[in-house]
Length: 93
Image 1 (cartoon, rainbow, N blue to C red):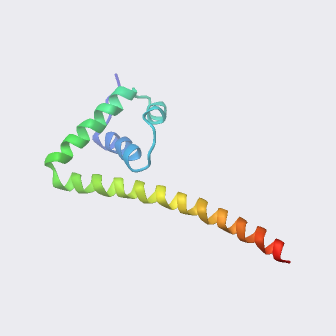
Image 2 (cartoon, rainbow, N blue to C red; image 1 turned 60 degrees about the vertical axis):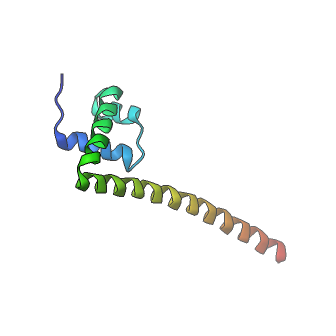
């Protein structure tokens, strides 16, 4: 059984929380079971209940993920509006 360092565990947890990576994709990349990753995430969230510094990090990771999702949505809307503007500009000519 492979032992993973605390740094590796935190990296995997961060990729899930902040980057939105699925447990399955992380398990495949790191060669660890989905159940283990799930346990690491649960343990980290429990640690955040008593460790203010880690709680702050968790909140920042969640905020980054939320902002990335909002940015992606706004970029899609912006692309749509650009195409619509180009379409209507042709209609006017």
